[in-house]
Amino acid sequence: MVNFAFKHGLISKRKSNWAYPYTREKCIDWINYREKYHVEILDYFTERPEKIIIVNIERKGWIKYLCSQLHFNNDNIKSQNVNKTNKNNKDHENICELVNKTLEELNYDKKLFFFQKKNY
Image (cartoon, rainbow, N blue to C red; front, side):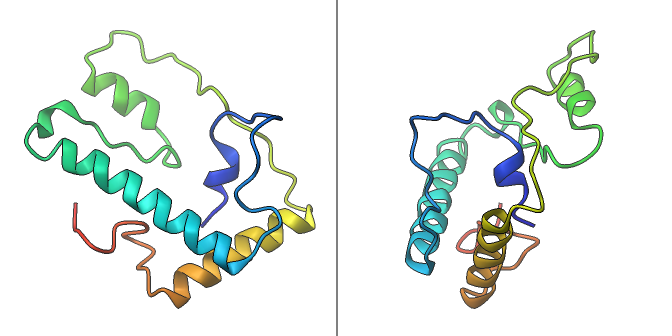
């Protein structure tokens, strides 16, 4: 479930990792920060829903879908900033386990993921 957080996005050598050293408290802070950030974005677009496109980048065909929504003629675009994850890395495995366990303890519905307080 949590692998997408490692797979997509820019990796900076200068930016500290939220999960190291990984603790339940840091995990809860990260979950709360992400939820607050995402809710602020969704709240901003409440009055202008035609101005936001929400895409699950883990689903096959997401680039084609996004291009169709933006009326691009060319959907032959490659995904950028995709990082290879060493799934044999014990830290990676432990962080994923910690996040999934913490989400479960906090009663997060995996279908809603980070949007417990509001249904979008």
